[in-house]
Amino acid sequence: MIRLLLRALVFLASAAVGILAASWILDDVRVTAAGFITVVVIYSVIQMVISPFLIKVAARNASAFLVEPAWSRPSWRCSRRS
Image (tube, rainbow, N blue to C red; front, side):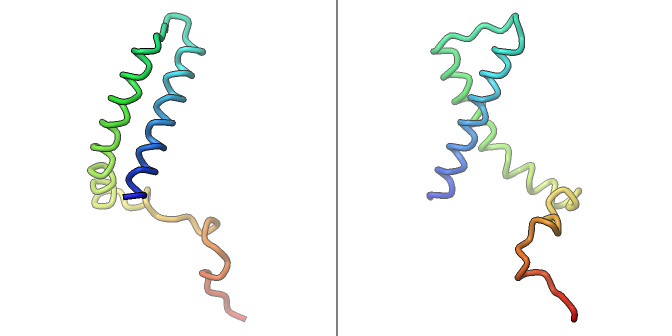
């Protein structure tokens, strides 16, 4: 449950940053408070629903995208030969 809440917070924050960045960078984008909240919530819900499906498809068809790089592993997990 906590993992789901953290994921939801990350999706909400990323959607908010994306909408704010678009409104600052693009001159034609105007954002009202109600529109901002609506778009952030809708985008986050769609992202939460679609992301497990996309991870499953990537795992089946393009597993290289899901592989953890060697440099990100802690040193105790790497096997070393002396």
